[in-house]
Image 1 (cartoon, rainbow, N blue to C red):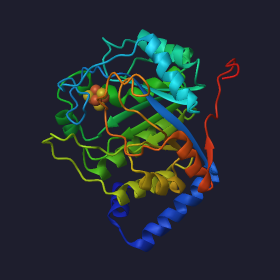
Image 2: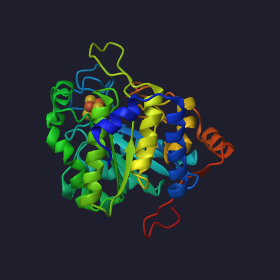
Image 3: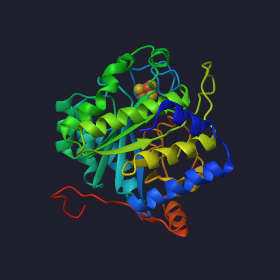
Image 4: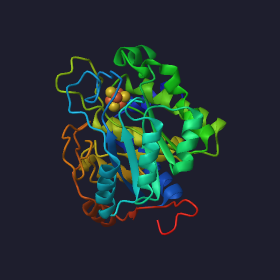
Length: 338
Ligand code: SF4
């Protein structure tokens, strides 16, 4: 690991030659460990009910958005539509409401998803070990959990109510996931909530701790940048494009075997330029509202998608740049043709 000061120096150094050397090293490391493979996935929102008050999120309990939870039939419609685009890896998301979307509901969504996708990831509220085990047995192979920010004071201010106020319970979530036998854990911070250098340094420490304690788990990192709500009065921290690019390079060099995800929060220009520097997984043709793929009953998205290219357009872009688009690199035993 590098020290806090070293990380800060890299992020502060905008000398062109220095950045080029950093990028070259990240590029070479990526080729060495991942070749030219880029996995493609899509998110699917099951529900936007949420009991938390994250002040930066359009789904927080106080927001007057249309609330919607997919029925089993609607899940199938959405999943069918996504799978018809060629996607084989799905990320199922909910807001954080154990009451409205209990574990059994999530399990029924996972069971439905198995009809369409060999790889099923989850981004839901933090669970207990035995609950993760149940979902693992149901077919989940990966879980995404972001600490959002590692600055405890900022965390408290940004999460004033709901279960998410418990910083430590959230911090310990990756350990509970690892104990459950789930194969991959995707960790991250929401860049812009706090000082970037501080958040990323502590994210790296958290990941390093997890790798040492649970070496059998596959890890990935995400660096989503905050898109502030229009009416927000909170002071956020600016995260320029070059900072994001440098973070991807540093993460690749420090953690050569760890996957790096880049979502459609980012513009095509940034996604395309970040690809050779360490990104291993990107989303495509994403919808961030509940029922967004075909139901169109709920039009309030969690955030605006900046890269609106179709799956075919993403594949064409990847191939034109010499990458190998990968729709699935993993199937569960007994998964049949899927
Ligand atoms: S960030 Fe997640 S937990 Fe927080 S309000 Fe939004 S959906 Fe709920």
